[in-house]
Image (tube, rainbow over all chains, first blue to last red; front, side):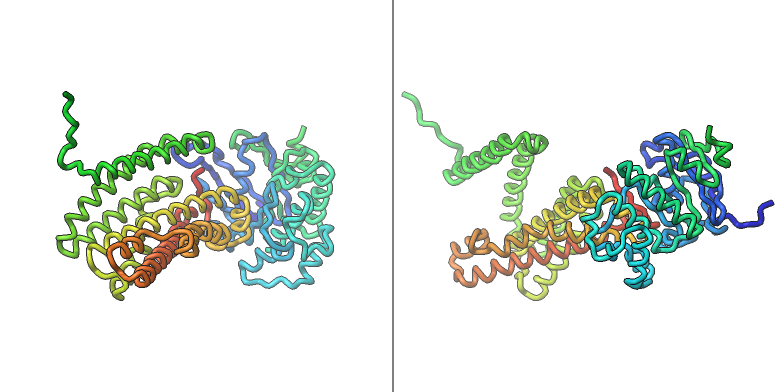
Length: 228
Length: 265
């Protein structure tokens, strides 16, 4: 029996759309992820992959089931604490008006943490955006904005990183460079990561794959067991 | 020989002129909305009913007012309460996308318009006389209603347009209040523009009815002007306070207790 407490455990989580529709979106989802592990979530469009990440970050409430972070039921955690510990990078970057530095400092400020400008500079350098701290967020290209969005989430030092197809809105050249960057950050920082992707090549690099179809777990296992 | 047509005795020449004036003004509004039918198709259908309803209401209120002028002072509170409930039900129709919109509108108007009117009455700024309290109160409530409806409409638009930014802020650990602040501020500013414009243009672009009425009834034009400012400032204070209260109350209608954005599209 594995004695390591999973970083996150999802136990029979179901979700319905709000009434009056009440359409089932996810049904009895059960999986776990260990510290330092990368889990790719695959499946066709509309399978419920993005909804699953929103439930883990509790931007939406599960209809039933339990989600545990390091063995603790996330329902018992205050929202600000939970969302600092489970970071989410969305499909589109949605940067706030203001400078790149203000965007990166936004998360830590919510938790009364002051980020030194030198720390922000070094974080930006790590993602290939040296000297961008004072740039206006609105002037960035799609690829640059998504890199800033990634840094903004990592600035909270999350215990679990959720990536919701972060490169799907980018052009081919940017997509590849941002994907390479994410993989490098995961490796270098030993991040525990759940990565929603449509790309089988990307999924093959994960430790395990969770394949969802029509809101249900269709398969879970190592890439060589899941991918054709 | 054709007999000259005799109007009924109650239809005085003054009343006949009034009906004709209403007809022309009402048709002008309808004609303009007909010209603008492609920009706002729904409004053309709404205008005839809104005009008929507004006309009927103001005539009934005129009759009630004439009767109340001879009644006890407390009846003005009943009238203003009824006006507040009616205003809240009108705002509710414009803010249906917010859960429990009627109680939200009612609480906002009652707190904003109610407390400012009470303050004015208690300090003697607005004399506690039915003939003054009801017209001034109705102006305050009506303007407050418009400001609140604008605020809620704009806020819904802002939140719908910035759902991604709001959820990004929440996902980084911001509270619902922090995530909503920029959009609430934008709605607050926009909703107060008409009331602010009224104050800025006072005497230059428009001479409101109260001042004109006071001058016509023999009051000093300077006092009439000063009192008109009192009314406009009261309206602004009530409208701003209503928006402030509504902006606090709306938070839990937009977000769950776990700071999750719940917005009906």
